[in-house]
Image (cartoon, rainbow, N blue to C red; front, side, top):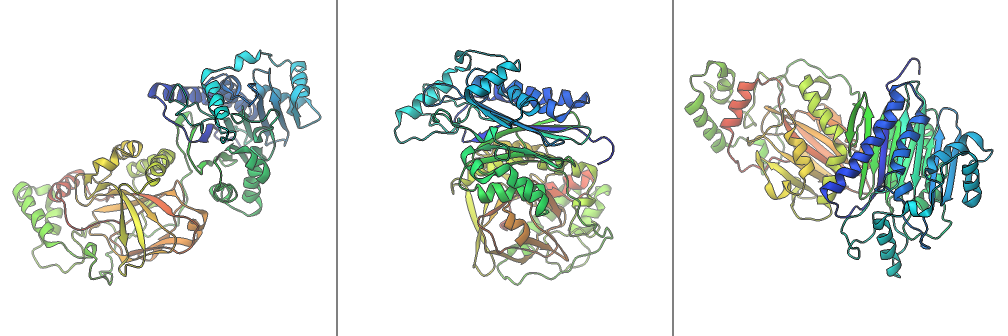
Length: 594
């Protein structure tokens, strides 16, 4: 890489199953994470190194009692706090780990001294403490690490003979004096303006662990790894990370299997680590960044170009093949299913729309284009409910959208993590989910409607507050109109959706990959006209579903999930959108879901 690059830093606060937490406590945790991020970014923006940035970020979280690192560390079974930390400089390959510290205030600073000033890579116990003290690290009494919440978590584990050592925020809360839980292990990855990468991790380990337990956060290749191309920080079930060399696996897949960043992380998180709690943050030398989570909840923030985003995942916009921008009409072939109401004109709905247009817009000269389509002078033989002939026609629109639409796409991609969090919460039960079948009834796929034909599904929306808030921020979403929908779509492996088309080209359909197994990215696709695409986590594809389209997911170990949102066709001006929204502002019988 030549020249300067845009610096980037990502920080995480652990993964697991977070119990009830008050809004006030949640705000404190997020604020601490954001302060940590800003401290690291201040180093980067002033020309500092990635190593110094991840250290600055980690120190602040070690000083925060809400996180399981430093001040907020969990207790071992003997009632002591034992702290671990690790750091790696991707540019030089140097690394340092420190483990089972009981009296060092900031373990990450001790790990840095191991990396820079020690002939060994990992030090543990009293020898590690002696080394850290000789290097000038601050000493504190064990009382410094005491927090009531962590102590109550230990009592909960010790009181249950069947309860093994736990991730810090997986502790059952029904035995505690408060129903809040604290947050977890911390880590950071950074890219500096010179293209150098670094990673850092710090943890108090597992509540109720045996004294002397060494965590993945101090072991190079297990909980963290960095080289000149990629930096990784893991969080979750550390003992399994050690057995699998999890962080190094991701880096090796990235290099030697020519996988993308998301493919490499998916292979490890959803493959080797599929039976445990696992999360990862990663950044490559090109500035691509990933937050990936298998189960539970993680908190992660990133800062790029001086802009901060919290509890979300950002993915660099993909470069898709160029598409033909020449306007052309679509083939009127319809699917073979006689029951597919989506493929046939709904005359009662169309009659109602014409009546409403006549009442309100008959004399509007600025709506003559809509009038031509809605009330043609000659009979029209069309499989569509409402086809706008003057709209440009192409199957895939992702790379051809105006800037305001790109803003919507970037928002959805930036909020991938929050959307995925709500999805995983509602997918844990069958409440609110409906089923669709193909024309032969051979396979079923599931949908969770947030907006169905223009109407918000209140009971489902209440269960997905983050998603609904995000949808309301979209500038071009179709609402209050029977042509608009927003829903989660889940395809089990083996699903085939017969070729069909949507009722109109007044809209475009956006698919955001939410939970897409690696096998689904390679072995599943949607065909739209003469084009096709596959789903990828955190990426959007926008297409015209008035084209004949079909979907298949023939191989895979688990379901493929996507968020589907309808957006207005960009060729409609404001007044035309308002008109279409009004005349089709009724509920139709057709079930318009892919």
